[in-house]
Length: 409
Image 1 (tube, rainbow, N blue to C red):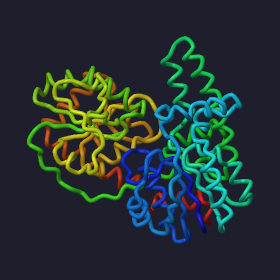
Image 2: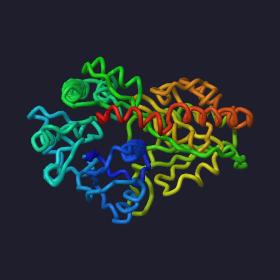
Image 3: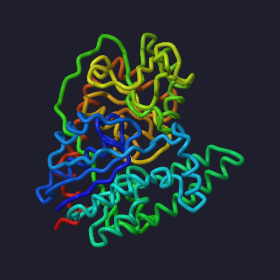
């Protein structure tokens, strides 16, 4: 079997949830003995060094990487692209699909489809379903698989609920268009992959399809985390994704002052992609994240030193859907995690077992204090995280479901 994998972002290095999921899926597909080769097509808004392409190919057996196609990912950083997306929207193409429309990617995709045999086209992210007509035109009999990382149309529904006036009307219209596009895509693909059982239920209700729930594979080695010497906490995630931004705003403004009253010497370090330094090298840190003991460091090449100097990971998340891969990464790193119910969404987690979970500021601050002061709790939650990964995110479980999604008998 030969698989062509089409995705929205070059997934190396995997420094945020989307690329982590994509890299996991590539490794699962390549691990199947029935798969002969995997070809990756992706887009990028920054230059990808040849060394990164080679590193990705070395990390995933059987993988051939087509040089990533330049395409703006954060549209309003490339304002010259906005008129094209607006024009497509006037023609009925929802924003979540129009933002990924690229003539160059379309040419590259069609060239790869006719260059050699292709048995399965694996479309990663709903927006890339924009290219399904091109796939069907060149390879009408190949199997198509849609992997949705989130319930995409729900983001516009959540956005509309927060707005008033014209912005609410626009958001409602976009939600309707996105939902219609999502429903049609679910029905037109040969198979659908979901990241969680909750998302699978949504896809069933929306498109009448039975999605294959393929977990992210998290290999790990158990490690004991020595006390870093001070109550230092960390955050890792995309610093532009709205549920993360809203969660950090809430935490820094409403929860952190309560934490500092309980643990006066507590400190908090915010790391992740998405903030671009200005000409002087300073990060544009949101005002809401400025406070005593809080430092925003942005992108870090290596996360292990951050984990080593931290006593726990904080994951305050508001809204969104899918699975919060930062929680799984925290489990793999042996970090006790404190999160919100939205952060735990899609994962069968129990407060106090695999993570600490609270929805209100006082409850969240109380759990942060417990992590800072209770060594037995830290050890218990760390082991709970490892046990969760063993039970739900092993390679064997993922391979079984992926075989079904790819149509392997």
